[in-house]
Length: 315
Image (tube, rainbow, N blue to C red; front, side, top):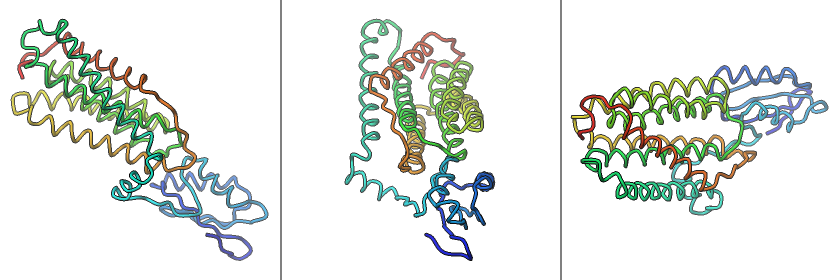
């Protein structure tokens, strides 16, 4: 980790989040203000620093990089494979307590939504002609989409840590795209392209901007652009496939989107949560379920009462 080089000490600091030339320049600019630095060489995943031990300590060098939002240590970071991660989950469930809680929240909330909708059906929705055949599948996909998106956003919001621009833009883009795509597709099938694209785009932009703000304006822009694209494309997919085996297509479509959201949560755990300085924020079941119920209720009302284009509502 440490070695002598001339009259100075040399240390290699491992920084796994160095992903582009901008990251390198950011680190180099930061160290220009640090006294005692004799030389600095930034690589793809580490930084070699020669310093005057009487003026600066290696702990200060590590903290200087951490202050920029990168993970940094004088020891290499371990990256577990999915198989190793599953073994770790079985051996150390307390470490993954929050993730396991999120899964239980998601299943419980999904059952709550179904119960509320069944109650609403027998109370007044059964008077709508062909309600089950016209809206049944789409309400199911709406429930799954809202719960999956809320669970992913809940997991992301439950950890507070500095996030690099690259990771932050990925977060904003994924949330914006999948929110717009999933909800736009459902509402596009029940109400047509105009309503589906409008609702999907607005929600995708809002969620993408909210998630992307973790890394500033770059993440916000990435999230908003993804929301515009996902919202319009989601509605377009369902309208174009409305009479072409869409009910066979949708399970695969929804499943792939859920896998993408799972991949995002997995990436966040690898890149952010393994950082020992991360702070956990408690978000209880009542908050999680309330968000799902309110969002689903509003979208449910849009499906029933918002304008419908010609040709929809027959699948």
